[in-house]
Length: 280
Length: 267
Image 1: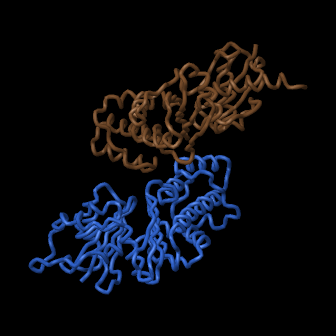
Image 2 (image 1 turned 135 degrees about the vertical axis):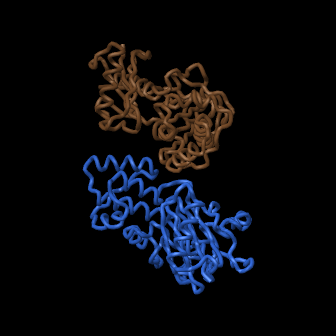
Image 3 (image 1 turned 90 degrees about the horizontal axis):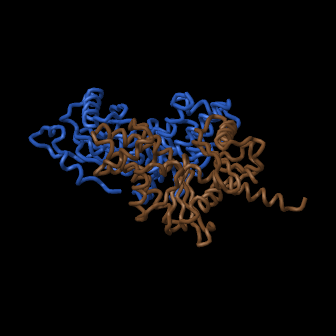
């Protein structure tokens, strides 16, 4: 029996379909729209088609992310904290700390040697150092997001970014460009700032072993390198770091009680979603 | 006869006040351009023109604000906190001010004064755009309402919408969604004023709020902002006639004081 996980982030919605043995059979990424119920329904259909699995063979659908309560096709909605902890544990069992840097928030989750979550920190009040921080800068600099992890790597003197606030840092970057500052140096400076903010969030927790770095930000190679330099433990980046939350949601999906051998109608179990919400 | 000038080089506006013997003769408020010093020069010329004064008559100038160090017209500089307190002592001289709240373009300050009107404590936020003039300006743009109309529009609201995010970047998306969801604009604007007022109130509580509370800076012209802040603090606010130029006035007064000292100092 397969399971599906859908992670509705502030910027992107990620979906995975995994087999009984937890192998990844299909994945999908789409920009998050206002129509979360429709988007997640289409994503579920796409995952089923890609994996060649019938809905009747899916034992559960789990949702996570900021839009998790609006995923009507889900049997359960779990917080990003739980989802990322479980997803990271699946991909790297010795994990002791998870850093998840997404579009609108950065989270650090501390785990004990049995993989149980013992503490966590989140920053979701302030956009500084999040994906949308780099998105704003990417627009201000005219540097595409995929280039953000590469063009700064050759910089000999990364710019020091004085402003913390996304809004003020954007003005700072615009004036730096106007003064003829090198884009590579500015990007390197921004990546340094992002890595430092994540490291300082992580250091408010006990870092006792391997760190799994997940979320879209982990695709930025320079941020990964800089984070490694900041933390004294091994930093593991999964192959698809942006799918970790969706994987966790899939693992957390419950075994569905079968009614006459068929899966319930999409949305048929939505009423149980709020009560099964795990308050982190 | 002593003519002095105060220049307040803010992040968003440059303010200039020229004074003669303790009387304001001219003032100017200009949007900050890419060249802060050039804008300051223009503001000074405009204020002088209004005061029917010549550049050569200015004996001493003091600059303040975020760009104070680049003002080539200034003889010396002073911090915004000191200049604002000095300006308030003079502008609000009969009021007995004990707390000053100043919202700037990119920062917010709360200053506590003792019974001799000396600064005893202050709080400043210049790290985060939440609660600053920039917050109001950016959200006004999302709502497509001119900045000057925020106040009057908000007064027609009967049930302000709760703005749940703090960060301006997130608040922009939140306000855009509120518009899509069909909330009346006046309720959103009133909610924005309340969000700013709450941040200010929590800052003000750290220094302690004692009456009379004086409210200056550009956003003090916004009647909705004043009402929201009064509701959060539970006090009536004293708002000067031209709230934007209090700090520049303080700088001009300090210029006169420094000139006096220079004159009396042995050569």
